[in-house]
Image (cartoon, rainbow, N blue to C red):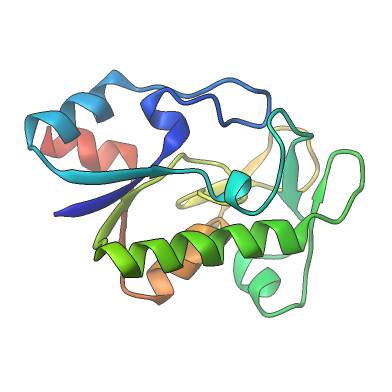
Length: 155
């Protein structure tokens, strides 16, 4: 299995606030099974700095809407960062295709990597059902996205 992993889950300081979401269970899962994996941050690949202002998909819209040009991703300062997010997701997809990536373990809730749950666009920490931009693009291209709970059940 060839796996894309959100860099923040492996302890790389790529989060919007300059921190990480290191999860030793993910690291152990990857190493125990000797999987080929690539850590990436779509937001950094898209050109966003670290640290950066948090961003969310506009309230009432989905990542599909963003990819179809019907909605935007804005940061907490009101700046439109849609193109940076889309460019980052497309860059990650290109790398996945080049390296034969078949699966992805992504950070929940992010407007890029969120899987099944993302923030609602109000910047009030409210979660809604939905996927991030990268997740949507990967699924559309037949790359299986795994959430942390699925991985842990395999571990």
